[in-house]
Length: 580
Ligand code: AMP
Image 1 (tube, rainbow, N blue to C red):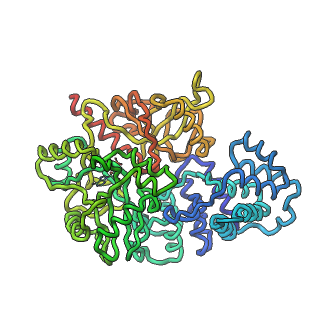
Image 2: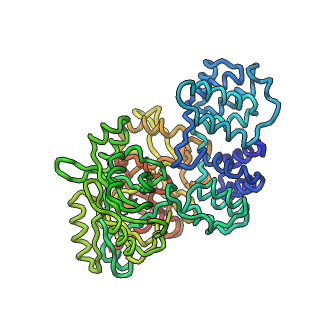
Image 3: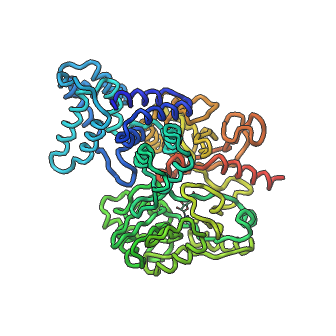
């Protein structure tokens, strides 16, 4: 497939405000690609050369990209840097530079670029490391730009600096794949949950192979199961059918641990390989788990070695910011609390009931310093659940996660088999929500030059859309506003994103990407917002009243892991019940 065909589809995706049009354009693109190219097309659309856990980063900064552009176009680097300062988008600089070439390598621009060629060259760029890597990266990129049309150059430049950001999520591609090849959407989704490498799944489908062949693989993270939330123990128990396995809700980083022979890999909730941050956990797991192969889940928590107390999530994050891992391990010790066993020595346990998985977990894990089994009890009485909840919070956890004893492991789903019991928000909204920044409003006075307020949205997994719930301007320190301004630039788009529904007109729109924690006084009805529009009363949606940024950037959450519209509705209903 010619690269220009891919670029034409990307331009359609970028210009439309309709999700169905995005799916249609991607489906046509996938159908037109050769079987051997389908995976590359998918990776390109998603903006990454490989799935997250492979960690293949291009390592191309704007400056390096501009140098390659300068060589390919014959326009001086300082001139291109000026353009970049003015335009703020390397893609636009590339387009203009290649449209007004002044010599450079222009002579070699005869044969049009192929998708495979572009992809393979970019992989070489990413793999170039060590001495001479910079020069090699520049010369590889120059060779691409020299042959690219201005429009192709625009997307290559954005891709290499990591700012393609079309806002196409994996679920959009699930829809596109099922439309393109006429395969059952649910089957594609299931295969993706087991093996969340969209390029690989696409190739599999394009080759006409049955999706049932895709199995759990040690070394490839599976999509984690998520939890719903409720605010009273009796509601939780009745929702779970009368009894529940209640576990402490540890406040740290979720870890999916894959053990094979002596080798251990740890994956984050966003499927990134985070093994290098936790050498102490790796060592402890190797000693504690008696199985050849296993996939386990748990939470890594920072601890105070002097008191043995659990510390907050924020403490653990210090550890990630340190470059020197061994110093970080000493300064911020961490422990692992395991709560699930998904696979052991050839047995896929995801379809087994939780109670059985829990028994198997305690068989294969021998607790020791650094590795524990998450504290749990089985209850059928709400008063006892409440006592356990108070015990849990007094020990520095966030509360409980209550789970249906007979439930299977529902990959990638936020179902009602796991229910969070956090703080009591019966009288007011003490609990926080994690919302996605979809737009912003320019600041005035002291906030001139940065954004003064942000348009925030909740996620709707059913329609794969974001619905607005508030405009938040409080709780930001001056440094936060500056930081957010810079952080959001790469997400800026000229019009509302097709996956965003909003009645308000923001000054600036963004591709959904950044998640912030917000708290408010309560959840109210509002005709200004689109979250749960018409669910409570015709024409009105739900909004957070007096919203305030808590100071917590939820960079660990993808926009699809933000608070859902369903959770907003539940929180609203619960408030009402108490007021009546
Ligand atoms: P939240 O981040 O508020 O949506 O809560 C869900 C998260 O709680 C999970 O992704 C885990 O990281 C964390 N967690 C802590 N303890 C447990 C547990 N016992 N079972 C499941 N998840 C837990």
